Length: 115
Length: 111
Image 1 (cartoon, chains in turn orange, red):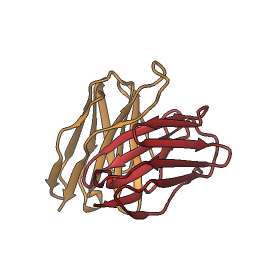
Image 2 (tube, each protein chain N blue to C red):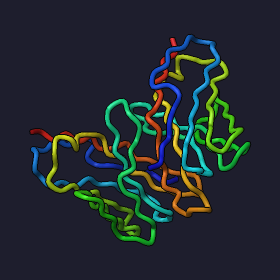
Image 3 (cartoon, rainbow over the protein chains, first blue to last red):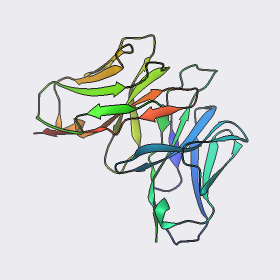
Image 4 (cartoon, rainbow over the protein chains, first blue to last red):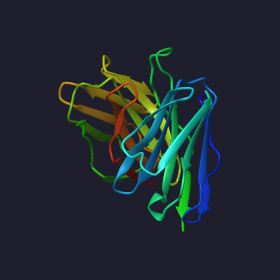
């Protein structure tokens, strides 16, 4: 079974803090994604990565950055957390050209509250 | 721009009923369609994936169909159980890395 893990289920941070959300997958997937999920807005893509050290902006990248130093790990960074970044953050991974599946597998989510 | 719509937004049924959840999308140029289940406060669990060349997929009591030309997919759940209560989301892949999600249908199965 594909397993995608996220470093924290719940996180409370103060405005202005630098926040790191970690995601690890164990299926040697090429692609990894960070989404945020908000009531009434659904899932929105923040950033994705299709290879080590490669990243692309999604629909709402402002206020976020990412890092992918190893294939299995994809980090989301909030450089200076703000209250409007309070949300559920979901990491996902998928196979790419090697599998031709592109089926996305999600982690359990991190509920981030910024006060 | 691809829009994905799920109707109804919420559904409540008695245990044992067969039910259908609907998903529609505006652009038929998709690579695949995926159905997910989400329990409250949790991540998404993949249920079924239908490639664009396929018409349906089955897993246990679940059957998903895809009609690309009309921009529609249905998720059929047979003999519903209280444990099926969750939010069900559909998503279409419109690019190599680009998926568009519906807002979900919140299902409650009453004992």
